[in-house]
Image 1 (cartoon, rainbow, N blue to C red):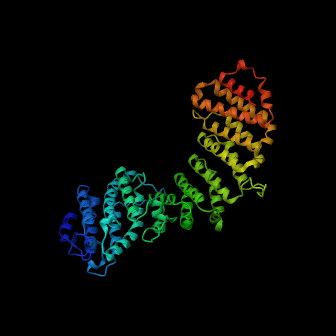
Image 2: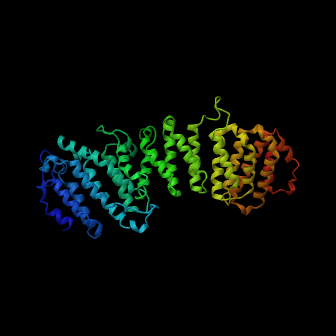
Image 3: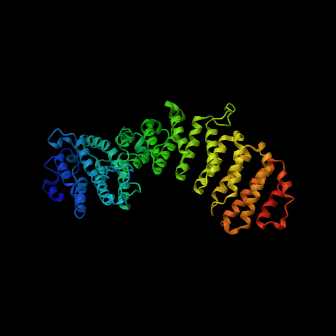
Length: 513
């Protein structure tokens, strides 16, 4: 029997529930029995897309127009039923319609065809849940007796965490979602936040609501915990993305309270053999480093464990991973080590030097342009954090700078622009020690300036102009560091043999005061 026919046989009629000031649909049969029959009929939604709109409309109408006293008060069940359990079972049946198939392989991925029906079913489930959640709100249309209101608040608090997990599962752009299912999931999440009487998702997750109940994040993490174990977290492809979404929503000062629940799963994801999982895990770990107090990170040796995990990732040859690992490492080093500029900071080598040495080693040997760009981009920030102590590494740093200035990496010239940033930081932080390297550095800068200006097709005009301007700035800093020796050397250059663009840059250095 179809669900509409089933509901038609439930003796549903217009009426007033006892103690309820608003009329609505109700039945002579208790709501647990009605919901049980609905659950038994929901299987049709997976097997028949033709009957789906009618089924969804019927269930939605039941929640939208049903008597609140009959729907949510235990006194109308004619039995000593737990309404939270009744609706919890119903919720499990609705969300189970759009449950993702499990993967039994080590990869954790399924063909996209396995998710073909999921968006349709998820959108339908979101519509039903939105109608249910809307009735549990505190709006003027939902003013009922104290007994009914208390039951509705209890249901709202119990159903909010699993409904939120379901909405987030279908909220992101993934193989099991489409535009319609994502829109429906977003509307469901907005309705849920509004129903709980808060103004944002972060407040909904972390803060107390108007009824004095805590945020749902703790319950959400408990729901996800069994799925985030080492032996099963890859069976459901959505689990890691749902976990990451919830983690990113929580910032200071709330995240420290949940550190025990979010740190191990993030470390687990980052330790996977697949690059995309490593990137996601490091992204989560970086968020933790930025939003948890340093004292909490150092407790139980967490920061040291995280440092070793991130440091080992530097041995990879994957640019997307290096791109997230280096910034995370730099922020973690500020937790583990004192700032290099502090008067009481030790001058002996520390973890900053360890990371710097390994970075220079990889930069010297790296041939892949994508990875060279990532290293060059992050090296300037590392030098800025280390300050004057980079003088320990100037010899190798000089080789890296000269090598990167010599090689063009495409129209954007990201590596060259980044390495010019590196040279500026070196000249600002270690200028007393660059005098002996004046000849090597100035020759490399002039050679690159000549290459860029004499080959106009090498890069777009805007990039070429930026390269020349940044090179001129480096020459000015180098001249200032060496007390005018660069100007003296440039006086001997024959302007007739220079490209006009290069000559203009040289004249800027000559004329600078």
